Each structure stands twice: as C-alpha cells, then as structure tokens.
Image (tube, rainbow, N blue to C red; front, top):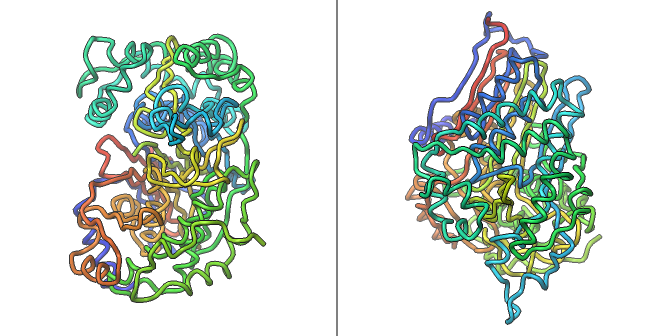
Length: 575
C-alpha cells in the first residue's frame, strides 16, 4: 500500500475510531509460521449484551454456531428497532471440521395474499402505508426456524441453553438506549395503532425513554416455547394461533400452512477472488454477493493506491453505479426467477463494464439502460464470530425499517417485519430505500424478497476476516469499503470505523458521510459531472472480527457510530 493512501485512510478513520478488541499471541509474535487454529474466540455485535451472551455460551462449551444462536436471539430482544424473531436473516457459516462454507437462507416469504394488486391504491399507485406498516407489510418470519436449524445441524448445545440469555433479558428487561427512544418517536404514530404494540412499548403509560427498563414477558414466553419445542414452538401451537389472529384482527391474510410450511434453505455461497483475497459471500436472494463481485472485479483493473482521492472515489462510484443497475434489473429469488449468474459473475463481463468507465467523466445513470438486456435493506443488525476451532459465522438479520411493521402480535411479544416493501410491489417505483425493482423481484406466494444483506468472509494467505453490516441498500457498499480497508492493511477496528460513501444507480448521486470525501475531491468529482451529497449523517453499523494466522492474534472491530455495540476477544490459552 502506498504511504500517501495509508495516511489518508488513517486520517479519515481517526475521527470515527473507538476502542476495539484484540488478543495478542501469548508467546513470540515474530514467528512467520502460519497457524492452523485461532488462539480463542472473537465476537463483534451491535449490542454488548448480545456479545456477552455469545461469549457466555462459548464458556459453557459451545462453538461459534451455538454462540450465533445466543447472539441472534439476544439481539432480537435488545434491538427490536433492527431485528427480531418476527423477521429473518442470512447466516454465512464456515465449518472448520469439514472445511465447508454454508449459506443459510432464513429470509421471510410472501403470503399468498400478497399480490401486486393488493398494494395499489384506487389510482393504481403504490399504497406506501400498506407496504410499510401493519399486517400487509409483513412476510412470514424466518429467524426462529434459522435458530432451530443452526442448533440442530451445527451446534453442540441444546436450545434451552443457547436461548437462555435472551429469555432472561426479555423477562428481566434491559436498559433503553437513545436509539430505541429516537426510533420509537419517529414511528410512534404507527406503533400506537396496534394494541399489542401499545402493551409492550406503553406498558407504563408513556413512550420508551432512555434509562428505563424495557421488559417483554410475552416475548420471553415465545422464545421459551422455541427452546422447548423447536420449530413447532413458533410455527405451530399457541404462538402460531396468536400470530394468525393478530394479522387477521388488523385486516391481513395469513394462513396456517404458510407458517407450518416455512423452510430454511441452505444454498451454495458465492466465491470469487479479488487481488490476494478469496471472498465468500451471499448468493441470491441476497443481491449483495453478486453486486460485491461485480464491483470488486471491475475495480481490479486499477491500482487504487496510485490514484488521487478524487479519481479513486470516481472509479469506485462508477463500479457501484453499474452493479446497482444490474441488481435492480436482474436479481430476485432464484427459486422463482432465472438469474443470469454466469454473466454477472464473469470476469469478462466485469472487464466490459470497466471499459465503459470514462477516467475523467461521470456516467449519467439515465444512460445505462433501465430495462433488461437479452439474456445469453440502519434498520438491520449484523454480528461476526470466529471461535478457537476456526468455525466462523457472519450473520445479518432484520425486520426491515425501524421497528418493522410496527405491529406486535398480542400475547406473543413478536414484532412483525415489514419486508414486503423489499419486493417490487409496483415495478419501477422506488421502495423505502429508494431502490427500484422489476419483474424478477415481484411478489409471489412463497417467494423470498430480494435483500441487500451481505455477510462475508475474506481470506488471504495469512489473514481471515468476517464482516457485514446493516444499512438497507447501503449494506453492500459498506462491505465493499470494509474489504478495501482490509486490503489496504487496516486492522479490524479501523475497518469498522472507515467513513462511508455510496451510489446505487438511482437516484444518480453520491451519498457521503461528513468528512468521507475531502473538499478538494468533492470539487473535482463535481467537475467530472457527479452530484455529491458530501455531509450526510453517519450510517451503518459494521461489525467485524479478524484472525492473523502469522502472529496468531484475534481482533474485533465494532462500529463507533453505534455506542452500544461491542467487540470482545477471549484468548483460550490464558486462564
């Protein structure tokens, strides 16, 4: 890496940086030996209570997959603004014993009632309220099935053990933090429509306030049923009946067979190479992996370290623009639509896209075709785990927008997602994140809506990193910036703190956090024809862990934009 580029990256990182976590090798760190097992466990998540729950499970004899169940369920309790068992997620796993990578798809599915026509108003326009609020906005949840699947197929410990921290926190409560208070205030008008939601968040007669204790006894009971009965504890029996009744009470239409028929799917992860890194990431119905591959394979044509700040941002943005255009046109649930994966993942295709990038001029998005060529979702949370056996988990889970649909099913404590808005409910009409879609992502019964969640592993000869982030359509570019940071030699905490910028084809503008792009570079980019929004509020919540196989050290990086996030490293060689 060039000294000027490294200096620039560090200068950008320092104002954002917060203390991360690391574990130094207990013996000599000067050895060049490549280690085969990490020295302990590293966990980074969006809340300290979730990180602690995962570490408690490791100490109880669990592996990374057991810890993932504990972290996931705990986040579902303490981050209702971002995720929950009424939502879904993607889990990228590495099983050290077999060397196999597995992608666990627990994305929500569309109920049969969710036809495109159901989301149009009397003028034929998208009914935004129905798409984002209440029962019609909710897909069939997948997260509970994923917790059961992980425990039964990859964990060592029973669900009664791994779900115990979440059950306790739901019953005894946790301290409300500012983000929950602010998020509730922004969604209050919707949240207070529903009696089940009022029972949870207005239990004392007033909205949630920072420092108060939020107790969710009904949610504790629901998670207990999953611990006792597994899949049937949520998708059948008393919880299922209450979910169906709640949806019906508010005018929605779910069927019992849509709950009992929900299936977690294991899919083959996407793999590609960028410079010295082997990258393993999410396949469709995530759009993240395909877009990530396109962007990095386009960018491999430049030595980014030799470009000045303006031109470096220019070529990265142009790669983003082209990948997001393809995301919009081609991607959807591969069980329902033919996704041209061979083309989109091709080095030749990336080279062709690269050739369309003018070195000194922005490409107006309107000049990139908005129709298919002939064929040959800070609402979300992420956590990353590496354990002492070398098992890895990169998991992103969500309920979509802040507090999802706003609807808590009475008697369950389950806050339902509003993932139906991630479908192209009206082709060509942007969703809540400003992202458009077409036929490939139109709703059908049982179909999984397209997602931007991008849990990823990157591995070089001497380093492994696990990373991912929330942020709606900006997730993919957060992960891209993180990978570029690791490629430049930054540590886990520096990667988590990197300033962010983003382009998603439409709208045709660069979004950038304040300070992410220097004033001179902004002027140069504007002279090239870019529109630059250079002082947006910070976004995202990247969580990452890494293992240096030469020094045998673990690091955890937690996003300083999120004050309740936590990274913890435990060296198993030290009592």
